[in-house]
Image: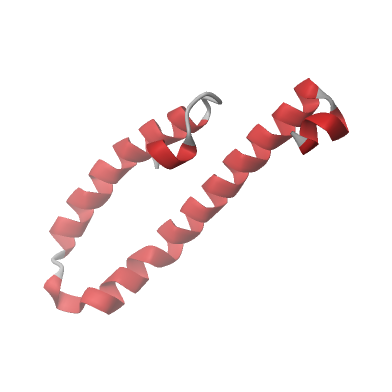
Amino acid sequence: MLSGAAYGHFWGALYVVVGSEAGALIAFGISRLIGYDALRAWLGARLPTSTLHRFVASQNALMAVVFATRLMPFLSFDIIS
């Protein structure tokens, strides 16, 4: 509401949507970059590489769905995530 009061309805909403999406994408990117190494360090040999690659492939499809739903302003991020 504050962004709407400060920048107007359209620009305020646009700034909130862009900022929210950028923050979510940055957090996701950081977790993808360092998450693999952290997971391998934590689980070591207990997690076969083929299992991890299958999991990542299914996660790519899920990422596309989450990304598309985050562009919809009427859906709660908490429910989707």
